[in-house]
Amino acid sequence: MKSIICISLAALLTIMLGFSSQNINSGPSEKRAKIVLLLDNYVCSEDQWIYLYGFKEWLSGNERVIFDSVFIEKGQCKAELQANIPIECEAAILFSKNGPNFSLPIEPDSCVIMNVEESDGESFSYKKAVKGEFNNSMYVFWQERMAYRSKLQDLISEDKKDSIEHLKSEWFIKSMNRLKTAKLGYIVHDAYIILSVDFPERKPEIKALSKLVAKKFPNHLMLQESVGNRKLAPISEESKNAGERLFELRKNRLQIELLDLSLGSKLALTFFDIEGNKISTSNLDINYTLVDFWASWCKPCRQEMPTIKHALQKYPNNFAVYAVSLDDKREAWQKAINEDSTQIFKHLIGTYPNGQRSRLLRQLNIKVIPTNFLIDKEQRIIAKDLHRERLIQVLDSLIQK
Image (cartoon, rainbow, N blue to C red; front, side, top):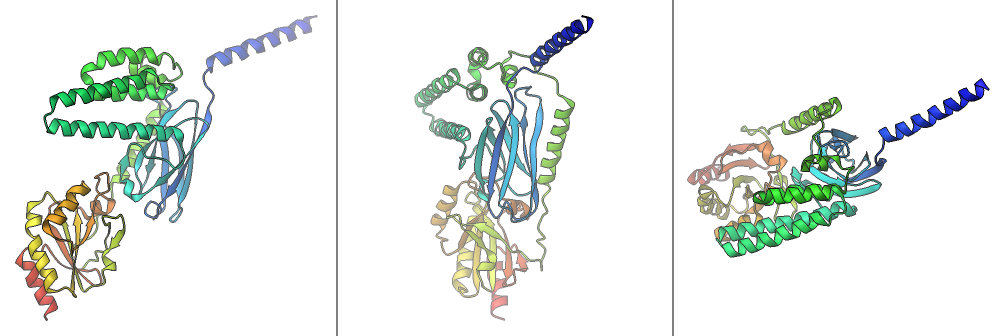
């Protein structure tokens, strides 16, 4: 009889502990989110690490984490990472050497496939994926917001007050509707942040609605903390370690090796033309090439164009111009080329479509323009900073000797 009672008590205790354990660990179960990156030749041009990181938004906005990391060898054009997550959240990708740092919305039990290219620049917010419905829905909204901000800036510059107010009113209503009808806690959080940035003067109204809508998503604790429904949790030791690691990775990434620009050094460069083709100085196959760094907004640069054109017309079979623009806007770059009638130059650009300077341009460390280098057929620097008549004099001495 005693043994039966003992067994019954043990069983009861097991059941009670089981219920207790379920209560303590209650919450959504984790499912895998898979990320496949298809890398272009630039991104996989050398060995490097790729990291997938973010916050455990279901625990706190303070719980930073490195979800996964993978090592790729030179020439490896595909990489796969994964995160075990219970709710949708925002992750980010970080390359230790070549490649952008970018945001990537992910959700449980999903797969995102994305092309990663040199022209993406050093960082971006969202990009359209080859596969990934959730990511692409965020990309569409981001494009709409960029269009709104661009149009708003145009109206401000034109001082069209009525049109400005009308545009802002339309965007506010649209953004608030997005917040009200959100079916995911992530969207509520994103809408709250965007609205607060775009309409700081209406922050109380935005926060009141966000607090109310957020209650529909109790498992999204970062959202609850952001809108004030819950106190911000303290930073854990694991989160602190992850933050320190990411800080070191970003710091090391910024430490790029500068190119040797002294006389006699080789200067083999490759930049993009207007059509997105890579053009190298070594492809020009001519005795002397002037590598000229300029920009549409640089008056001294453009004042030198007639002399450079004259040099090219004087020595068309021995001399070429490899003109690298530092413009952050393609339209301004092309307009300046047409205005100065310099189509006979080989025109390249040192910035990505989003305006960021390319890695190669940063390695050159060009601080002042106009700056130029004269290189020979073997890509060696034989002269530099040849301005005005000095360019003609040096070419005369080299070609007519």
